[in-house]
Length: 198
Image 1 (tube, rainbow, N blue to C red):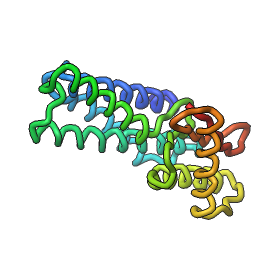
Image 2: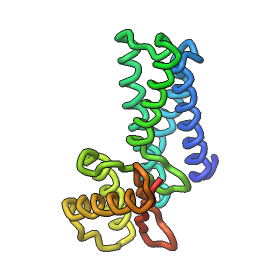
Image 3: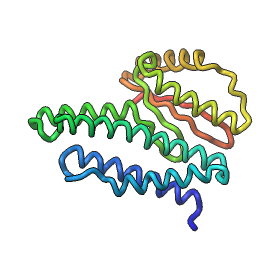
């Protein structure tokens, strides 16, 4: 049996592969949705979900981030599939319309998908007032991580939301960017929250 870290790395690769295959499918490069790859991802997620009690905190943290990432992608894919079934297939458009649709979808995924790299929870925010769900996901990951490591988590959501709003506006002006990426990570046994414009 492979170590948990290797299994998590493999699951992360499968999710990345699934995203590429779905992108190809929606662009007309695949005749069918990647159901086999999706089945492997779902099976892997379920296996970890059933064994969370045996995992270390860092491993559970990484698994939860992967599960959240898949859930976000899955919702986007479901919506796109529904649009296709309603007769709005991207590859049925003109080339220009197809390119515009692809750019819109890429931006949608970038704004709404939590990205996982090296066990950190990453999420992009453009407008905290309109993206309360994104801010809530960030808050939940931060508070959960702090509690698990025995750190104080005495900031309520309203205070946190105001902080994110102020920080986002500040960085967007300083960096002349459209979006701010927030990262919850564990460094030297402590929970860190970082923000950068991109």
